[in-house]
Length: 302
Image 1 (cartoon, rainbow, N blue to C red):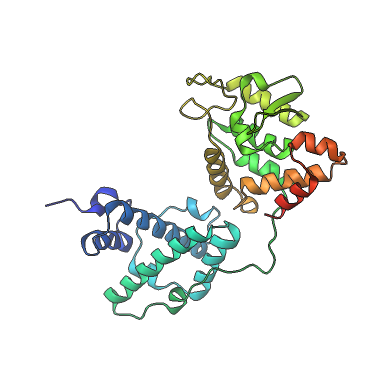
Image 2 (image 1 turned 90 degrees about the vertical axis):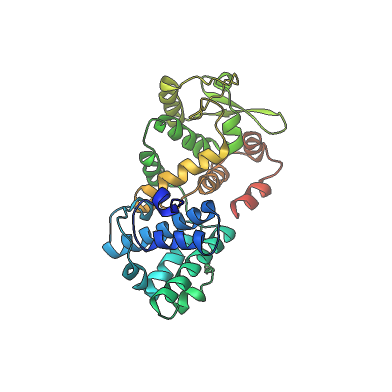
């Protein structure tokens, strides 16, 4: 007799585990897809537990033990609307990602209504993505910068803090950060190569130089022969997706004031600071390698 998916993968018993088995055994959904749905539902359950107990941590850091039928059936419309706002307005879920999340939760509650002989929750069945009245992007103030850097812990803390400061204080792009070589580091500048092969010298302020010196003291040389400045866990060139993932994980587990801050928010602030720095148009274009200030202004709106 084959082992149930819940016995192999589930982290805790409960109604979510039963639903995972139902998807595989009755709906004939693949084990991988069922487990992905299960993790989305666990994330939703963590959020509910977090706000109900008023826990002093990010929802994703909440510890689950057993999720019961009553835990899920007791969901109120206020809690649901709070969750939708959290995903869309706080964490900025992309449209496709949000649609999948809602579809999974909706399917779970339809199944729950059947096995409990209750009516499906109408506010979930009719859920729509909220549209903000006015799109506002957070400015990364010195206080927020400190909070972000404080949230970057672990063995790669020095590397990650240096990356954040180079993006925020120097306006260096993600792909440009990943492409930096050890030989690009100078005394007061760093040589940045863009996608077309053009090289520009970007000055480093004192804080960024200090962060770079701290990182260089513990940097582990790469083994792929590319001599990248920022080295990945696999001792190769760091990828831009890894930087974005690193920052999202850090800000979600940090203090509430930095929840949901992304690499794009840091880049947007860097461009704004550059426009307000008093530098001439020629200086700004030479530092950022763009054709006009209007291009930077348009980027700040996205």
